Length: 331
Image (cartoon, rainbow, N blue to C red; front, side, top):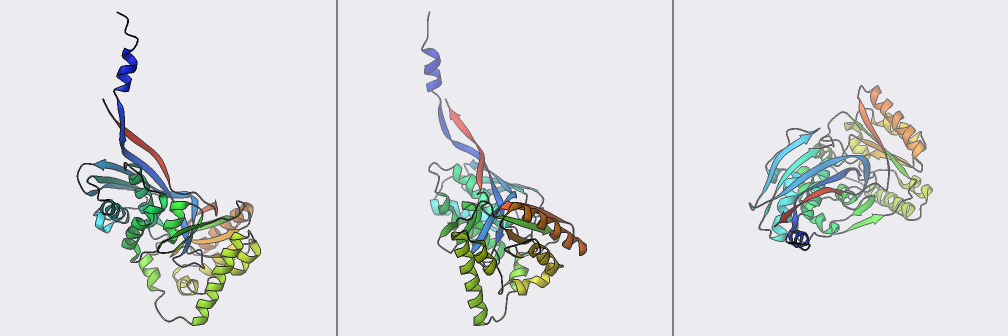
């Protein structure tokens, strides 16, 4: 007997389910960008964290494993940045199901490259893909802030915003604003092989500040933002000078003055500490200068007996992204 309709009927009896597993990548970042303490950051191509999230029936968050360049991180989700972010997501949405998380760390601990933020963001982007109705990217920000607070003790979004949206982002407590910069502008980022814990770096900021320091820093931030909006490198060069935080953290970074000078000697628009340090960055209006500067900065760290890693990236760097997801099927 001829049964030409059999195959199509069988195929149509299978319908896709929501994804059960998703994997996402979040890039490293330069936090503060010198003049925007806890407010301004930009993503960096090349380094980052990966997260694999599985939907589970149990109403909880479980961290199954942590691999990569960092070991010994807490697997209790309440003490882990990514785990806390997923707990916050579950609670806010009233989810009946839970998540199992595997982290793959590509950003060194205490590097000043946004490692804790990258774990939060990668986990949230992966978990979001498993929802029946995924949230807009900006809606993940509040959950990421909850996670970041576990690592640093405060809800600041300079790293988170740039990872969520990509590029240079102004991150207030309630809003993320991406700031366009010319595609030709690049960053040189150098990470010496030494750990500087975020909490220790923040403790160095305790004390009194003069009103004039705040005025100068506000002026510099305004110049940098105006320069980016107008694609005016001269304005950025005038403003990219951290007079508030850098002087207090510089002593924590071996040979910082020479590393910064090496960055400036290669036509930098400005150079300073990335995040809480010890990584150091410089901004350039072309890639060739950034590449030359990164080598000189590594040489300066080597003079202090420190090996280092370097990245050269567009300031308009990548956003966190879904790598893949695995759908379930039902017959």
